[in-house]
Image (cartoon, rainbow, N blue to C red):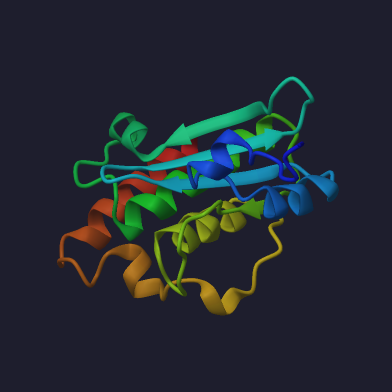
Length: 164
């Protein structure tokens, strides 16, 4: 007697990949903007599908902000915005003009770190199809909710990133 079932993909079984969602994103044939949150940083990648494995065009994480003068946490809203802005500038240099957002299995709510990074990418000049209602408020992006010194640090780092 033969078994009448198929064994699910390894990553599906582990709960790491939603293949239905991934297929829908790949059918668009657009560059994907992959944003992942960790306990210590934000990772931003622009990828294209290749049959042998996804090709990463640009990869940037918020811990690299140290090179631009950021001296605080790499996992909050201001650092996510700055990392997104820098990644957007790097992607433009590689010829990326627009991308589609791939959040994977992460839970994302209005105004969180993922959308702060997306706002930074959009402000750098790339086109990402996202409703502006999900972006965090400007005061939160600049860090006013954290401390009074944050907006100053934010502006200094932003100027350094913009210069190149």
